[in-house]
Amino acid sequence: MDSRYRTDRDKVTVITDTETNKVVVKNNIPKTFSMASKVPLVSQTGENAGVPLRNKFLNVTTSGLSISGGGTSIGVSTRSLQVLNSSGSTVDVLMPAKSDNSTLELTIEDSSGSTHTIDMDVAE
Image 1 (cartoon, rainbow, N blue to C red):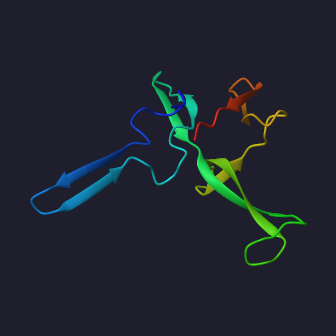
Image 2 (cartoon, rainbow, N blue to C red):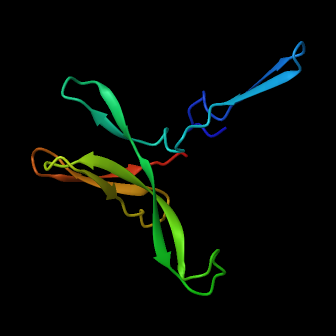
């Protein structure tokens, strides 16, 4: 198992009841597959926290491919950071890939006005 994944994930529990001949199967797969991928944050009180990255799908035009349903667009998956802006509406912040395509990169500005780029290691 990849060390980036949480240890309580990707497990299946099978419970059998021989008296009623029933089998119950439970799994620990989340509704989104990005629970281990979080933007690291430290609150003003010093508490470590994280904002989960969300799956985001975008249609991208392509050619020369056989596309289900026809057409020229395919759905491409990426991650986004959902933030609440000052107007009170929610916005998805998309991030570019690092030049070697190994991670996504989040650029932030700190309270002094300096910008920093964080490599977002997306484990799942």
